[in-house]
Image 1 (cartoon, rainbow, N blue to C red):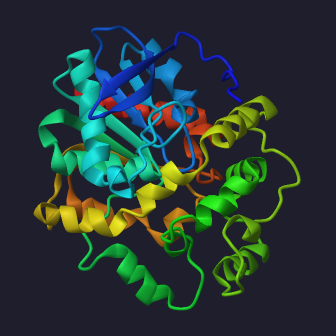
Image 2: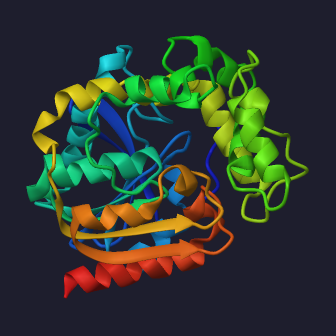
Image 3: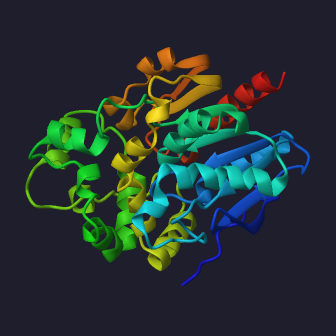
Length: 331
């Protein structure tokens, strides 16, 4: 089933053929405006930027938000190796080529954040600014990251390690996409009080459970997510499954092997970070240490009370931070 997305004012939906795939792209703003590319994370879609696209377009920017490869209405290649960081960053370069842009400002959330940080290292000539959301800049690790995670977490459960075995997480997440999307969108936030510690123990327990079945069923939808919005996510992932997005995780060690040239490399273009104070990712990867690697860092915006899905959860503060950053680098 293909469900039409709830409308986003002033947005054109089109397909760009580049780098051997078709990318479904939401396109808005003046054709000659400075280009901003919005890169979503897991498990999300271009639609995740529904609150940012109109605001940036109204400010005069040409906004391109793709369903990245493996997601939504874009191509879903079969080979795991088709989802490595070379392919993912080349896809974003292809969007610039399609609109005749030399460079752009790249904004990423979650996995998209990791991709845009790498854009700034692998394709610095195509990047005039970069904003990471929820995942700060992380320098190249001293060893392959999944190998390191296996060592650190040992016999405990960790979702990235769980995602490595082909077919396993795919089957669990795809068995009931409504439950998967409801629990993920409503549950990736630090719970205040005693439940937070208990939830962390539950998530790490070596008890044979999968990923989604560890997550609590929410009492209801948060005020930032409507039923129609959730239904669109569910319909898309029911149609596509989750394998494309999970394959990004299966390339983490491969990405490390493919990029020895970025060892000790700094991000030299203007950069910024946006996150939510209740995002558990900021506990695992605190943003404070990234400043040593960002040569023109314009600061962090941490939105009080916001969880992991910060651009959907708190669009007002996020849009303000993005527009301030973009105005600053356009001067």
